[in-house]
Picture 1 (cartoon, rainbow, N blue to C red):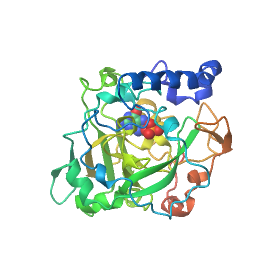
Picture 2 (picture 1 turned 60 degrees about the horizontal axis):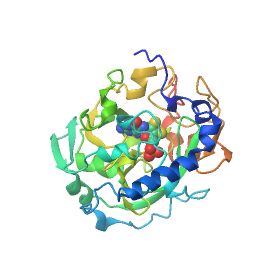
Picture 3 (picture 1 turned 120 degrees about the vertical axis):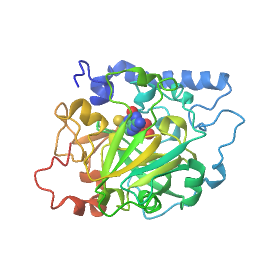
Picture 4 (picture 1 turned 180 degrees about the horizontal axis):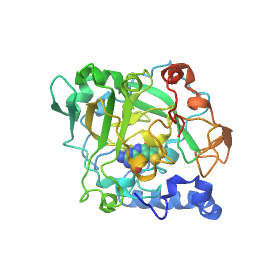
Length: 322
Ligand code: MTE
């Protein structure tokens, strides 16, 4: 599909945003936070629910931290991470938190389809309560060359795979976001191949690092982060971490993912982080740490090589790092 003007996240933010706008973001943030306070809402760290409606799983947070996943850098401030999001269903810019409040997160049903013993649907609260919820501190590296470090809560994707009971012949797990253009006005943009689709190999999906996120900063997941269920695959560029999932399909065919359908030459299936492989339009050697003006060197597999590199050693001729 031909996109005449690439969306802003497809370029490093310093190219996507004039510097004075970027530097003025603090004022903008203060303004929207003030506006939210005036409306009686909690936009920045806010719950995914309207005031007065409790999240049915709120009692599960804060979850016990799994200390194995330690960080080499400070956590990103909640107010920074919650006000700088990519969620194209609600707009092609970063300040989608207010618009994303239109996302209706209950009732929410998740389906398991394709190569499974039995196709079925499950209510999100039943699913979350069936899973061992824990907190993990993960780095997140966006393809646009910015990064953050966040305390996700959720459960290993491997647990969900077990729950879904796939056939041994399944080779890929495809994950899809909702499709509802009345609720999410971004989906009226017909040139995007909705719904947002991502996929992992079964080895990746059952790797210990692949994580289903249901909460962040010790609370249920706010809407702009992709409530009520999203992926965190921290060794891959952030666009792999699909938000607000409603469908899991097990298949033996490699899916063509959302951004791959739009620009296959720039966004591939694998998308593993590698500082030595530049994006066709910018370097991936370093990253800006969200909430700071600091740049730090980017690490191979975003620093998670020990857990994931073995999965790729026999894959010849694949573009593993785009
Ligand atoms: N999932 C959906 N459904 N829609 C999106 O636009 N954006 C992706 C990913 N998952 C996106 C998505 C991109 S480009 C990034 S960098 C991360 O979500 C951003 O996650 P965050 O907003 O929690 O930082």
